[in-house]
Length: 393
Length: 138
Image (cartoon, rainbow over all chains, first blue to last red):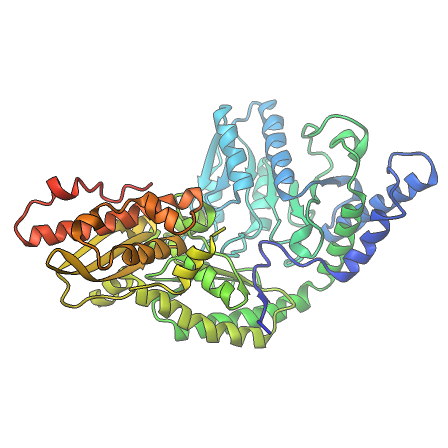
């Protein structure tokens, strides 16, 4: 039988069995509209409110601070356009973010720039972690909002969120964090970490796709996002995705309960693969900070080869992975994150991201370590660029 | 995303390698854009008797190089110069829209190698091969 190793958990994760079980009734007999008065409806409503409590507990928030959305991108958009609107009313026009945000954040900010907002995109040094000193230096008397991701989706680097949260709170700046990659992997407490707005997405921690949440700290006023009925207290109208919301609640509870155990295991597995690859493949490098990164995140660059070819050959061996190469995204340039940490284009093209999950075993790791070096070699043997690199030395 | 033909040429590239005593070598593309193609030709009596390629790039870059070498091996220089990127795409049963530039690169690589052949003979290649728009695929 062909091996199958799923190592793209930053893209999405497999739905957990308990999550699916918890959702099933709401896809079948418990189909009522949560807004309906009869019992069938109110049972659905109760299920949604239970999920809201579960999400709030997982984040150290209050249930009324949790709003269900369609996922990470929607939460990011609501937070960003909402905060921009709120700050403008106070005469603030400057926003601080970073160069390594997800496109859901970057493209929303670009739209705001067209509306006249000024955005500072902080550089990150080679380790992929934004510096709080740089953040503080960027603040002006016009700064009203900051959005910094909790952990990077490509290189897994963990940002100093509690520190930046503290600065923002002291300076009266609304602070949003895109925590899509962090929830279920890192301990988050929105109160202790001074977070005003936080985005999350269920399918990144074994929940269903198409559902997420935005935490809006009580006292932070941002406009409603979808106008219509009274769902989500009128702030995000539309008949609820009951099964999805229930799945989100189950998934986040499950994920948060196992953070430490999962982190311990994945860190070992991650470092085992990193060590093996750096030792066995010459001219390879690990992108992002070696330690301050998500437990399951690995991001390599291999000189002289291109990422899409690498992914397709890995797929032939049953390994699902991803790359920051331009060819995989359909855009002209390789990953903005890899360029931001200082990689030249040609090295960024040759990147490989493996994001591990609890299902991955050390046997999988050994298999990856056995098939990856010959695949890299095979592509290098074909590559005129590798020929040049070799001859330079 | 890719046709069976593309995958076949990517997984089993034809004529991959170098020719040490090549009569002509052409290279197009650049590392920054993520693809470089290099073609080596042996030419005897105006006929391409052997051809090899090396490519840095995505699967379609490798597949277009591979099929292009197959299409012109054993052909005369004049015939090889008739090779169009469209013919390369057709031979592969199609390419995704954002990968068409790979087929342009393959056509250019063949032309660059033939230009090199003429240059080595002291002949200005431009009137014959045409102007090579240095892999301006982006």
